[in-house]
Image (cartoon, rainbow, N blue to C red; front, side):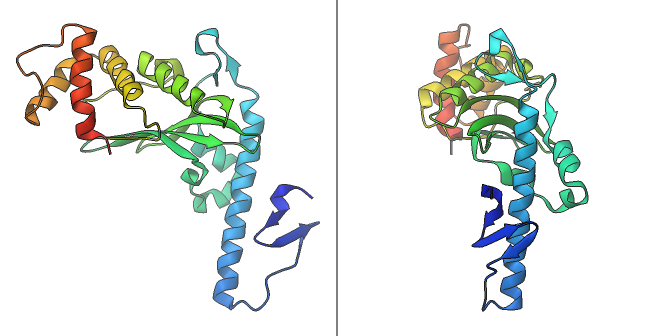
Length: 235
């Protein structure tokens, strides 16, 4: 018996369910059947991810993270594993937590984590178009690898992981990391790499904040702007 066969108080042996719940109405029974089926789908996807992540490559500049040759489409993987059942599977049910949520007037982008049964973490992103696996690394103990991922992401505006981060300063930000000093550093790096200093100053001016007459000519000046902007958008 493996952990995947013990779900909702049932034991499944050789494809036959034992110990079904008794005394449930037909509606309740269908509900539990649905939940059971969803959990089995999720376990099948996680097992496939455990296998796929072993193929990720080590790159010295990204250590201790490992990366696929290119961003791995999570939607495609789910379709390969579940076939027709993929239509009813919510890919975001795999999400353990959101590392960074960025929101603009017309779009949303998330960086988030899947925790595999082995406790290995997968770092993913989701836009309005698709969900992708960008990297793996670290057991789900503490947030050290979470921070490394965000640092590498911001330092390269996503290039290290085969994506491009662009657009103006987000109007709303949310993160599972509560350390504002760290988050400020992430955005200073990101805004420097993407050349977003002027757009940030304009955003502050529109909000009636910021040192409007003082351009951010150096990183220290940009950090002041970011530290003023971040509390306005952080939720």
